[in-house]
Length: 121
Image 1 (cartoon, one colour):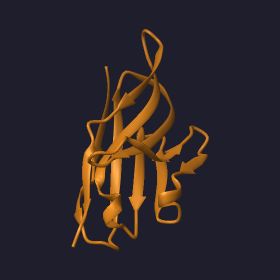
Image 2 (image 1 turned 135 degrees about the horizontal axis):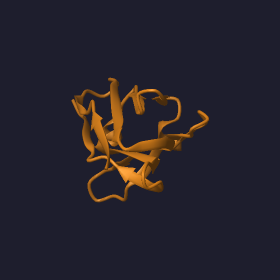
Image 3 (image 1 turned 30 degrees about the vertical axis):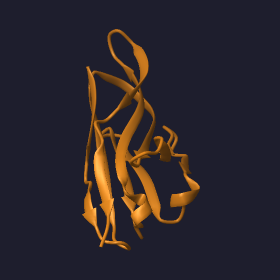
Image 4 (image 1 turned 180 degrees about the vertical axis):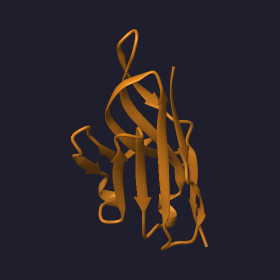
């Protein structure tokens, strides 16, 4: 069994910052790419940022220069530092990871349960 658990969401004023964390646990052999997606009410889920096993990063245009994704490989953890937050960043943020699990070896996409981020004064 493999699980992703997010934390760090909450209510913040415009211009503020939040740091999201996502920890993977379970029968893990290796983790390939990890990323963050978000879904606002009435909208489709969209990629916010992702990071490969080699450390290459990719960002949505709307968050470039404000958000930073990083990983702690030893802890199976991915972070999303969000600065200069705007009301339009309000959404449920989901962690995603491409994981190869052990015994049997099986590669699949996994999702966390989501964490709410609300940017409002």
